[in-house]
Length: 125
Image (tube, rainbow, N blue to C red; front, side, top):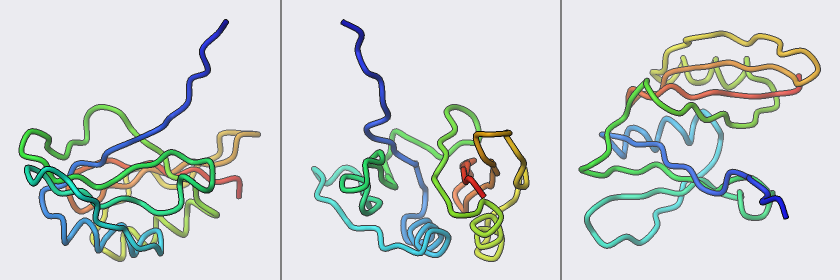
């Protein structure tokens, strides 16, 4: 029997939790919720993923993990990549690649957050 593979959890590493939390809450118009930890790191979780069949994830400030432009790139869903890209720019982010078509699969865009991470957006419009 073939194993089904799906994204279940992601972490976006940050240096300044207050700044990162403010940035992501504005870009995605949401409230990130603090989660209990063992005290060695800080974690704020993105809302609603469990109830919307999306992957769960969080901003994490951890002494052993640093923000980076290198490595895995995650894409957040969006109504329109251009809108979230614009909000990211207005809140201290950078635009690495503006909205572009990927044919019948929609559109993508890539921006940089306030912490030094590259973040993708996906939309069908």
